[in-house]
Image (cartoon, rainbow, N blue to C red; front, side, top):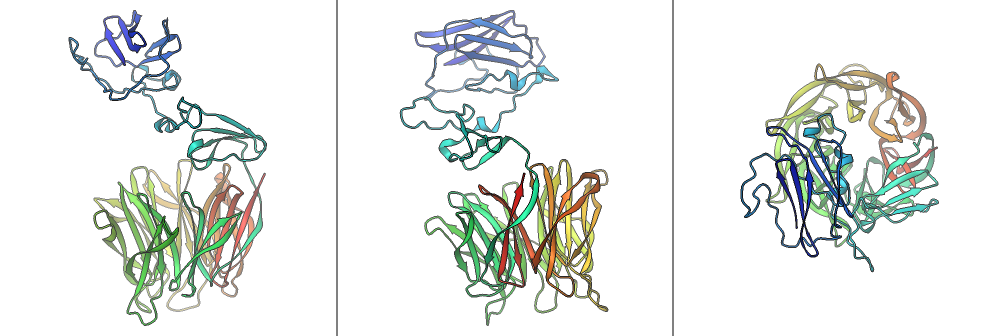
Length: 549
């Protein structure tokens, strides 16, 4: 079908034309022995172009290249020349066949043209879109059809993958990835103010909200509610609002975690109480049924006053970490457990146990090739002024990496700004064996120092029994919002949105009245950007819309 032959001072490009094999010969091509060379051959219409090491183009006018080639049952022969005489005796670093585009602009210019490497864009890794109707030519994602609209958003599904849409209203160019319109060029949004959008009435007081997306189904939110009946609620985003979708019986649920294993979708609940009359507490993993379109019980795991689940993957292995808060009424120094997915039995099995003190939250994150897991330790039975531990994945297990002094830690939030890595801890209360509790204390942001390879203090922020941090972006601006829950006398407090201002750190810009706020979640829909918070003192959570300009 096609071939490339190299001889002294000549390079021959061969292809199968309608009347037999054709040869295009480039003369005076100098390829030195014992040197790397980058060779780009581009064929379009009646022209064939050759560039060696990003040099001057050699152009040949020849008979037209066929508009299509049947590659059925074809094979690649690299270096062997099949049954021809002689053998290829060089080295080949990279071979890329790039349909529909000249690779020259993707390779050249190069600081080392002899070793230039083509970085294949993600769009070119996908298969061509199957044509519909009377079309017979396959549509490649990079050969996109541009749609222009005055604000009405066109559909974005598998059939539209790779198509472009110019939104004249928002002055933006968007690319369909098969599910969502992704911004390519867009006027940068800036946060203006926050408006009350929806009162989300829940089954009972809510400790946590998990917002997640199920392919082909849409956006959902799971609330971790106090009462067992009707339990915790799952809500679906319908016509721009959350609506009740499913109720699941839980026992003082403290957190939900949505995750996937392959094409399986799961939702794990952390139950902090046991069933009435039960001997122990159990948390449950639910699996999404694509037939019944609901979550069904999948696996039950024995836990101890569980407050959080964290799901993560390392080297294609899937893990779940549970934060066991205490055993019984006052034994806080117990093991929290990391479970690993067994692809044979298709269940989670104990992989490692870690000693924790009143564990409240796990946070997994990666920095380059290194993987970390940090626990928020709240109380050791005597004091809340204790160490929380950052673990690093080494030798197939988590080992202590750094100890950080925290004060009743309830949450860790990892985020990245540019090439800087941060960890924010929410400190809940200062409590000693003697003396009153203090709720108005500092929560702290730490930054990873690449020289010392440790997290060092970056900024203290005064909070009121903080329970959660949530990091989010609007345009190019970065924000943190804190869940202030209690100041010692009242649960009706302002939770605060902070904006990143470089050298100044995070600066408060918006104060949002909340009641018993325990969790913030940021999410996006076609209607805009939103924040939702949960209330641990009222069966009413709230959704706020972020107004931008």
